[in-house]
Image (cartoon, rainbow, N blue to C red):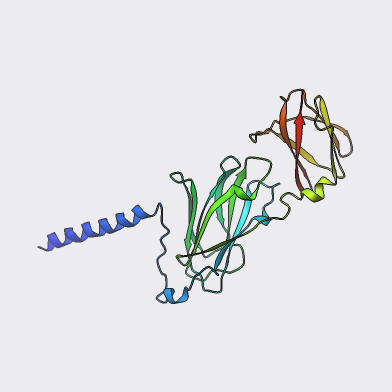
Length: 253
């Protein structure tokens, strides 16, 4: 009799465990870590997970998006999910900036979604970056629609998502006034001039680096030979100490 009861108990535990793990692909699971957890949480649309895209540095690799919490509640668990444009971005990792969050992050190939879930034995710091979502940039530029379907949860309850979009994505208004590209369109060669030292890469329309060689004419001036390029649109990725400017170059043979 005792042996039969023990067997039933083991089977019940196995069924319960398998049921939980069967749900983890599509659901966030947060287990309360204090007896008064539910009383601390009054999460609504006024509470947000904040993605600060204005902090993206296009000259670094990988690019990093800070994520923080905006709330007037005590938060012990942060979860979010998002999708991204695979032609522009390649998922790298999610970096934990805290010493107290216990995180799990992964990319689900079944629904092309990045998921992050976490919990903590102490309350989360508010209004300061907790994690960095890191991507490798496959093209010379990044635009707001490259991230979409963002969902967020605080203490296991769905909240709003806030995104700080950059007003000028690559300091274009500043750098454009300091950079000259001529002729454009061009057939044989083109010249790039800047007010300060710079580096330049040439990308085609699918984001591949053409690995072009430049001839230095004089201080802060380069000549690009275009004979090896096919006719079409290209993107010059110009970097200096102030940031990045992406310039379109039309090659016509």
